Image 1 (cartoon, helix red, strand yellow):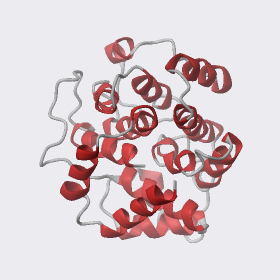
Image 2: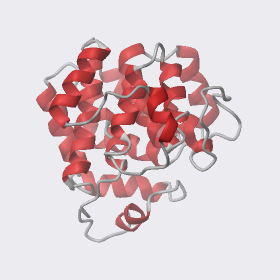
Image 3: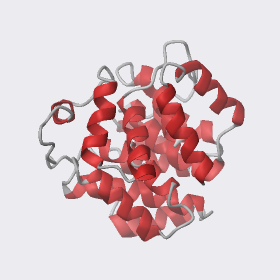
Image 4: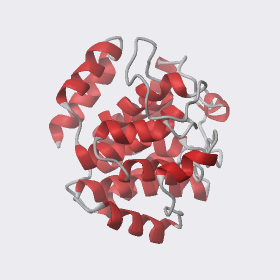
Length: 258
């Protein structure tokens, strides 16, 4: 989904230069897409075309080798055969948004089954599976116009996440965290406590954590809640994705089908 990709690109320059404010340049010449974008497009390709998940994800990541992949995942990309490695990293959640997007007019069970299919190939730890499912479920509920309070209550009840803190509460003591359990609840809160797509991404970046991944997760949920301004999406396409026409092809195909 474009929401995840925009969140990734905006957060790219703040992953290692972390900030604790919502007042920052939203898109700059220094921004770029990272592994979050590559993996999201790969998941879309898998689900659109019924492709083998592990091999397809490997192929996309090998095509874009210099995108700051995590250590274990970086080894997995070249593994033969590729086996899951019991990860609970937030990579499970940052790439999963197409599972909700492509099943938005189907059942939530279909969306969650799609999430499981693309997650278990690497992040088969219970927390990894849960993080991907919770993200998918939140996006699905947002597409079905559930209120932020209802989404918050349901995700907290179903997945056991503490969603009682506000963005300001989280920001105060939050630091860099690459786990699902330390990223997904915070990103969901950023999306639910927002009044626009851009506001959700600003919330996520302002936590001072794993900025591109927080932005990707919050951005995907925020797209389902608020939509994305056409001018913003067009700017991202022409400014940051012209070097990746095969990514744009998959994204455009995905949006044409729904």
